[in-house]
Length: 396
Ligand code: ADP
Image (cartoon, helix red, strand yellow):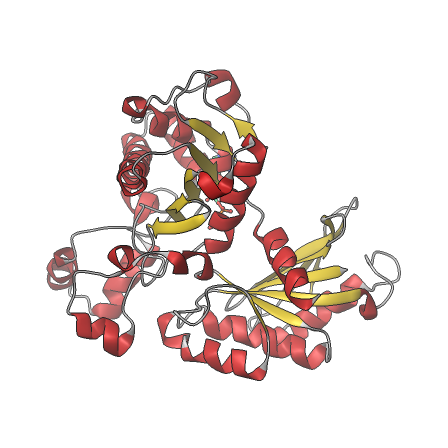
């Protein structure tokens, strides 16, 4: 079956058409600047990328353009839309309602809408994509795959904050965790790759992208993760602060004359390695800056790596040990320098890095030495494939 995996943001939409039998990507691309002007990127497997400017007043036109591109006579990946067997949608927040992926029905949509105030920027955009697909592809089964679902197995001691309990009772304020599709995919895939028994394993996954999080996975189930009610908590990220003393918010608000929205904007968009370096959120720029003697770039890389190592240490405590650690996502897969710096803090665990193996990028790799007490791997994430797999499992 061919599955169209869709990841809909407020002004963008990423898509992949995946043949679920061979798990190969037939075509992929993205729509950008939806509601502004509109640009479609489309790439059929084996061909060059095509980029076209095309009006996309709403997500509906964007999805129509994607469907037209998929069946285009010359470069289409399929002949007609009956060849799309199902659609899998990424949905950011499933609250406590969804502990796994779910078939999209009217009741399911209503339940997702009830989670909207937990993710006011993301969930409404995801729902717009779902509704547009319902209109344009009536009768095609659709599945929602939640960023939060994998983390629903966390115990109460990991998800409750030290806040008045009534906020949990009244508003469901608790840790949810994000990037769950990636943490789930990578933990399973690493166990397979290493020939480990997932049902008897202690795994830590470091998903280090522009957004970043770490999770502790015991016997295949998540027991803790670093993002919280929102994706702002935890690691220092591209532009997000991660953990800070909450009192800093009041202090800076007074000094800089900012309201809550202004402070949230700083913490989400102007902080992280971008804020520290004053230069960029991208590790390629930071490494180049550091190599050219820019001390703030060097500081940003140090702060980022140290925070990752501290979280790994705390999750070794949560798991009472660790068998294997995975690095994944843009930085985890492509920045040997960060992996090296993180591993240097883990000597007490008996981690030893194979420097030569660590020099490789972007493929399944063991980067620890054969005598390392803990296996350390690079495992490229593939959220679209995970969405396609869940979709097929639910519609079959
Ligand atoms: P997201 O999905 O959260 O946008 P990604 O997982 O795509 O993020 O990661 C993007 C980040 O990965 C970039 O901002 C950059 O910091 C990092 N990155 C990508 N390629 C490289 C590279 N070759 N070397 C170092 N860092 C890289």
